[in-house]
Length: 323
Image (cartoon, rainbow, N blue to C red):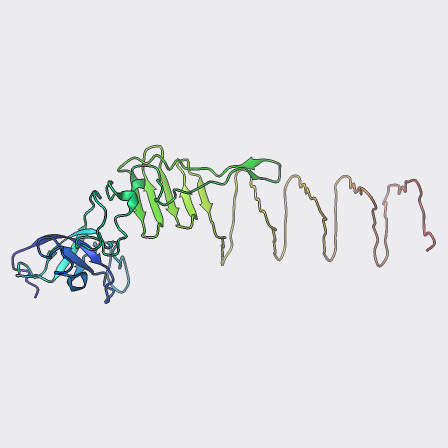
């Protein structure tokens, strides 16, 4: 029974189960001073469900706002009882989580621990629950530890480039705000002086990162797709380099290319299939073949010199040869 006029009772406990059958974000919490740590006395399944309180920035209505809390088995939480100082209060409310220092390994057979033995993670033994990336470089077992930039990427003009890094090994506490999911997805908003950056990381290694100097790196480890339902415009103030180890295929209704010079360097055939092929050069046209050269048509082949001369030159010139 709710007893809001009774004695207000605070509590501290450890989450042991988050599989709420009602999907309301509730958790079974073993509360210090109320529940025995002995699993035989009070198994996890006998603990009452504690209801979370979300912040005012979340609507908590019709799916709007944050509707799944972040605590996990092994998380220490803080709250109060709605039913006040009853002999065995049952209506617990969770107000927030309480970080600490992981001084010892988890003992899943005992209460006040994670019964699934997932937390604390080995990387955090002897360390605070604050994300390691909030105050230091990535370590083995943390997301982005195996992040390796692309190096010596060749370009079409015989140059190479390297994927830039943001110096993410230098966050200073408490300026790097970090969110990490259970499977290793990561969001960092780092306000460390001279290293301000934003980093959104997927556990596959794909990421988007904004560097301190304003550069942006987008990297996909599993292919990329972009769909624009309207017009799209791109402006590059410097040079544009595109490198692919596979084929480059372009399809459009019409193509318009404008620029200074165009240079095609090919190690194999160059073929154009089209209806009409027109070339207008304001100066010279030079076509030279290393072996044979053939110009012809299934209809009439015309060579027109206009007001200039037509010259045929070679070791042997044959006009309408037999056979």
